[in-house]
Length: 350
Image 1 (cartoon, one colour):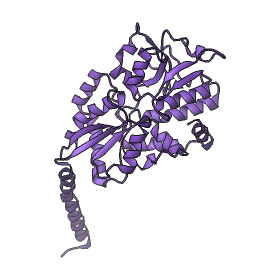
Image 2 (cartoon, one colour; image 1 turned 90 degrees about the vertical axis):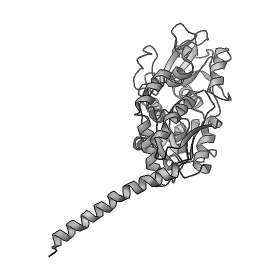
Image 3 (spheres, one colour; image 1 turned 45 degrees about the vertical axis):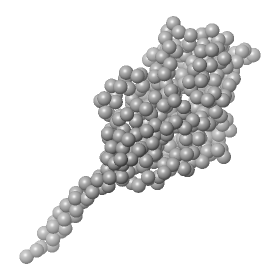
Image 4 (cartoon, one colour; image 1 turned 90 degrees about the horizontal axis):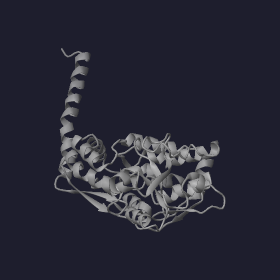
């Protein structure tokens, strides 16, 4: 006679068997979708810069970690400091898992702040994959030529002194925004020449003495402009941004937090630094099919744990300290919950 307990046990066993049997079917559905397809990785900058280097490295390994093993193709989409790419991924790109992309680390902050009619995305609605670098070993550095009139942060703060002329890409780009923030909050005499087409053009402009320097990530310099890191080279580091403490390789360059004149200025700097925990953000468009979203998120982390990928990253000088989708969303929540007066202050600087 079938007791109530036995009937319940049989029902649970049947349910478990059904769920287990369905797992391969779901995995097969993802594999069937991706088999023979191209997966496009959109890069919001031109070829040769740090974002492009990371994307091409990722593309060489990502396909083998996605069920169905799609062919992965990098597509550069420069424009407006990567805002063009961010808008494309949110508004236009197919929402089927065949397109992912990367854009400037300050794009999430621009989306949270609002008030910019050119920003067409809500960063919290992207399908987040994460970042291959958490900036744990990275830094956003103010490089200046050693022969420039401004040779230190103290020089840049002198009333009536010569400006530190920095290069930037389009309005709203990371380097431009950091320069504007620190000019206002720290009183630095900075002049930004915006409009360079890409990172490579800014490097070249500094080498030609058209500008004094730039803000740029250490990983980008290490991967594409290593001569800037030579002790006997033409460049020096004046300041570090997005660092709680000084990077071990630049013990003489102060952090922005260190030279903040008061607690409010330090709070503003710390808020603006939050996106830098996602040094190289990667997303897919909103509203992806759930199984494909999970497959992409898992593949992204699996790539960043792949020994061959890590070895190649070390050879080309890029930092691998990955952040997953969950941590990325936590960062966005932290930004969104910041004190409204601080968000409003930064919004007015944009």
